[in-house]
Amino acid sequence: MIATIRPTLLRRTAPKPFSVVSALLATFLVAGCSPDASTAPSAPVSAMSRESGSLDVRLRNALRGSGFTGQVGLTLEARLGRPIDRELAELGRMLWFDPIMGLKDDNSCGGCHSPTNGFGDTQPIAIGIDNNGIVGPDRRGPRNQRRSPMAINTAFFPTLMWNSRFFSRSGDPFDNSLGFTFPPPEGNSLSHLSHLLQAQAFIPPTERTEAAGFDVPGNSDALRQAVLDRLNGNSAYRELFARAFADVRNGGPITFDHFGRAIAEFEFTLVFANAPIDRFARGDSEAMTESQKAGALLFFRRAGCVGCHAVAGRSSEMFSDFRQHVAGIPQVTPSLTNVTFDGPGANEDYGLEQVSGRPADRYLFRTSPLRNVALQPAFMHNGAFTTLEDAVRYHLDARSQGPAYTTAALAPDLQGPTGPIEPVLRRLDPLLRRRVVLSEEEFTQLVDFLREGLLDPAARPTELGGLVPSTLPSGRPGFRFQFP
Ligand code: HEC
Ligand code: HEC
Image (cartoon, rainbow, N blue to C red; front, side, top):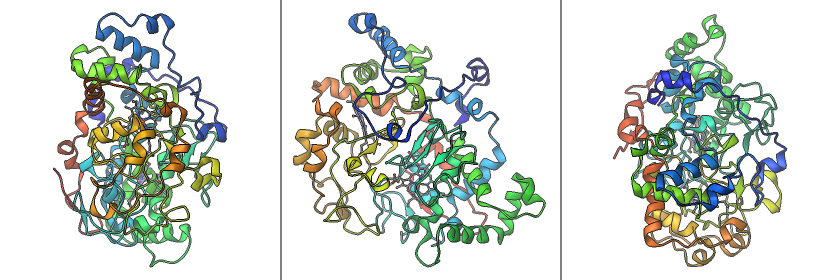
């Protein structure tokens, strides 16, 4: 939370203008094998060849060379250009958890983006409408297609979703000057909003399998109007919106701009970027264990992870280049789903091709931002792995592990036959074709870094549980959260 920021530090780390990378759609979305200048690790040659010195010195050189400062969590309000509006964020928190926004009356953002898991999924593949009211390991119902990513830190993401289908054309989610692009029907129509997350909030209430259901007819505008009718008809929400917005106070209707701004404001409070690696980068050598430091050095150097899980420039130190790559992930298909999967066997996920329509974009998924990855119960876009160890072991050598993958570790409804893997592996990203050989000790160090070195302790479920409202403004019953 923002509470992790000391005000003095905030003043000292002044608002640096965010470097805007001009973004042509094609180069912006699609991965090349060579990262662009803003993400390329640019360690001085001397530092590369002289990998001697203490572990601390080598890691500091590697971090500096990769553009990592550990300060990004302190930059939110500077980039926003104003302080967070606490009252508005509070309203956003209520909406987050209130099924009043789900026209099927059984889901809201919080059903899929849960504080039990860093505001990410409790499931390997999301369960939307027709769920059993539980948010946790015992959630049941028909599955959608992908795992809900963690909403924490999304304030800094220049592209959203597993296939980056919502993005800010300036490469900066805080800068709408070149517009925000969504697939049709929204297109560029949400570009008047000042942050990408305000625009993103327009989408989930219109998703029939996620929250809206199939009872209310009409297009996305009709579904949004139905949600607004509910909010405008509710005196508690009228009052909360009136407190935050003068036009509502003066008798005007609650609009979707208001809704989006409230949701985004709550998301702005969910910045958790004060992990051991950040504290180390800011000068605290004790912040990481020797094992985490060794793992970090592998990540930034020999194992080549930072080539995609980038930290420089528009990555905002989120451990993603926010580009698309084929990582060769097995195609898990639920036995009960309310989404039509891709391919002749309806057992595939075409990733970016779903939105671009270009066969060349098949199986491309956005590099996962890795902060707080330890909070996830499952890994990759479809939860194909249930432990971080399994996910990383596979990722290090997808080419030979792909054909041997089994669903044995997954929930029963995900154990059916997987979609074809050969066509996926044929398109494997060049950077992942090179097999990274690590000793068992190095592997353990790498996982230790990912699990502990990237975890902001303030994002643990014990810390976030207090954000679940005890009662909801709509008077509806809340979900049953299963906190560990
Ligand atoms: C049915 C479960 C479900 C509900 C309900 C839901 N989401 Fe999501 N959310 C997902 C899934 C799944 C994805 C990724 C989808 C994809 O990439 O195709 C996602 C993606 C996102 C992202 C992008 C994260 C990233 O890393 O790019 C944000 C932000 C987000 N959701 C916010 C919200 C908000 C705000 C609400 C409520 C207004 C909401 N979601 C409701 C499942 C859900
Ligand atoms: C070619 C680019 C690339 C390289 C290099 C790369 N990754 Fe990834 N990584 C990805 C992509 C893309 C995904 C998401 C794949 C998916 O779900 O379809 C991913 C996912 C992950 C995940 C799962 C995160 C989650 O949200 O479930 C972890 C952990 C991870 N990578 C760690 C690493 C580590 C450690 C290295 C270095 C050994 C590495 N990656 C190298 C592109 C890359």
